[in-house]
Each structure stands twice: as C-alpha cells, then as structure tokens.
Image (cartoon, rainbow, N blue to C red):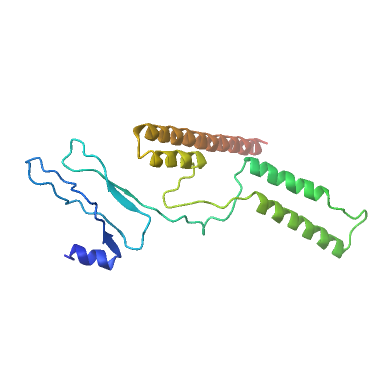
Length: 199
C-alpha cells in the first residue's frame, strides 16, 4: 500500500494544520489530532477550520473549497421570457423598422446591403442583452442571484442557524419557481403539439 505522504506528494496535496485537537477520547485519554485534511498545494483560497464539538468525540471539520468558474462551454445567452429577452426583441424590431427598403425590386447590391444591416442589428442587440454563463462544478439550473446573496449572508454570519434557515428558504422557493416554469412550458408545448395533430 502506498504511504499517505507519498500519495499526497504525488497528487500535489498538502496537509492542513488545523491548529488544535479534533479527537477527544471518551475514556479520558489525551486529546489528539487524528482527523487529517489535505488540500491542493497550489490552492490559496480553500481552507479548513474546526467547529465546536457536540456530543461526538470528534470535532466537525468544515472545509470550504473555492472552485473556479467554468464558462468556456457555456456561451452567452438570453433567458427565454425574461426582461432581457423582451428588450432584445424590441431592439431588433425597432432597428429593422428603420431600414429603408427599395420601392421596387431591389438589385443584388440592395438585397446584400439590407441583409447586412439586419445582421448587424441583430448582433448588436444580442451583444447588448446577453449574459455570460456563470457555471461551476456544483451549479444547478435553478441557482440564481438570490441564492448567491443568501449563501454569502450565511458565510458572513459565521454559519449561523438563522442564516442557514434563510438559505434553505430562498433555495426552496427558487427551485419551486424554476420547476413550476418548466412544467408550465412543457404543458403549453404539449397542448400546442396536440392542437397541431388534431388539426
């Protein structure tokens, strides 16, 4: 079996000195630190800390890992039905309405000029209203800014039970709203498909 120290070195891990005992034997023996925590050696943001011990003979160890935001596989987008979606559509309609079309059948150059203008207007509106995806390894489709704010408040409160209840309430309501919208969309889509079939 590979020694723990060799495994840590091979995988770029470093032992975290928790600074205090984490194990308090029930038989009254001297407290010790037998709970080992390893983190990536090049990670300066993640950390571990020892929490208050309850009835267990071990202190809980809280480890916070700072994962990078991954956006390379998530291109900018506009959420369907959002305010940005409405503004995007309105900007395109206004821009297209301003295009001067030939009164008679246009030449090839006229058509190319108009299609180029329309393409530019769409691209400009898209750039103005899209947002880059903020996706991480733990992200969920329903996670939004209200969840981020609740999580930050929970962390800043030093993990208070009150802010934990608030975080649970916010995420519960956000998930419910998210999936209610998904269900409503599926129902409407199925109804529309049913009408197409019957007609």
